[in-house]
Image 1 (cartoon, rainbow, N blue to C red):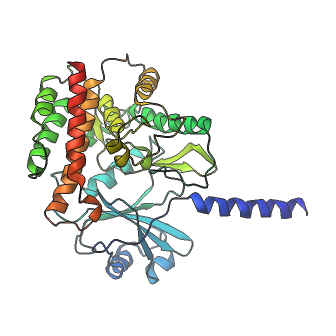
Image 2 (cartoon, rainbow, N blue to C red; image 1 turned 180 degrees about the horizontal axis):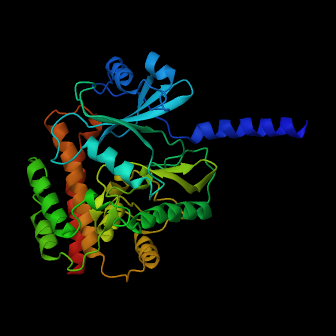
Image 3 (cartoon, rainbow, N blue to C red; image 1 turned 90 degrees about the vertical axis):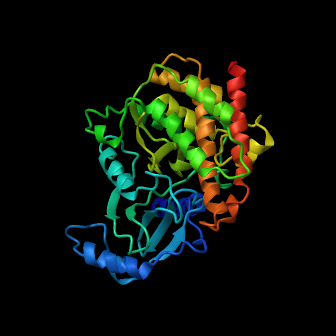
Length: 382
């Protein structure tokens, strides 16, 4: 066999192996179908000129796309539109009652546009539509980042060991550190958030959202709420924060999972305190020693051998950022309470029949559990 033939054979095998581990969308959920006829008409009306919009191919203007949907759907609905030789991502807000300021497609689109030049992990934004009559909600289109997304479990065809897992873990954390190190003032990004006073706004904001979304089967959370109000840190740093930084929002290179191709889901990004951003991240961090309810909530592979523990993450982050490692109790309790509110907002939509997704049926259990964990953290401090 010639070198050229061997190279083609190896390349084909490599592509076949990659296809098994690449993240893919699945079937569109009932009640969340996309009106592709109206979408195609909108595309023709606004993006038919190939000289101005090079990302639009003739197939997009003529053919119906194959539409699939990414799992989850707890926040904005995310679809993959497949055409011959090209795939796009469409993001839109969910149906039902939404928290004030949440699911703002225009803000999400413009923020990523502004951030892309100074933070290369943001996907390329393509188009935004504010006309809700097209598909029933505002939406935007962006490039599809093709790679491995480390969801609850890594694809079984990826060969990993503790060393590679450790490298992957640190590479993803480095992306958070790089984001927090962006000079947002030099980049002209002061407009993406209010900045100073972030800690108090967040505490009061999440308390208000919880009280508004409460249902009869969840705790009042009064002890945690009171503790958070009384223990807000006096020192506050301000930087660009992601506000939902998790492994399943990272896209990894299938050839080398320690290489991050991109970071997704910028819906809640703003100017805020980096330690609170880290607290949000650690609320999702499930370790092997955690109890069975935590294990049931796990949606990223932080349980694998080689992953840093929550304490090790704090050490790694503070060392890289040049922060002194101080008491992390407030940020940990805040992250857990905030996650409880997010879960409750999702459950509220299910409870009031604004969404049909059966996965949300028992979310109230996890709301009570997360608030109990936040309470337990505050008790440990005394």
